[in-house]
Image (tube, rainbow, N blue to C red; front, side, top):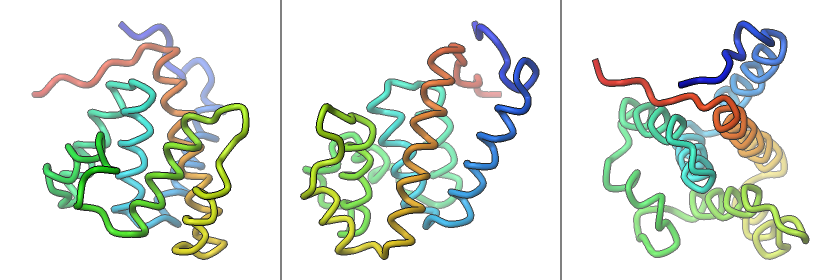
Length: 146
């Protein structure tokens, strides 16, 4: 059961997060955005977000094969160079260690994404990580099938 409802307890915070979410939707390629949201949510163990983003991606036409492969994207042949760079950056930003994002990950991403695209992607990855943490703290559960 959910601990609190952020939309009612802290509506200003929820609106700020929703605005960041909108920014990502408006500025990052939709396919890549859903892949990085799903990957970060898998790494963070966020069942609510894994469920939501896999459903969103399916509704947008993504294949189940590619969605399942996000869990093992490095070994899967289904992702192009830009998607791989985005997924590697997602892994690095989500598992942010003592030394931050490794130079090789950043250089690889900067090779296939423009500076603006990389900035937008970074914000989108940071946003899903914040959502994952909010959902984990509040213990939101996936919505049951109707």
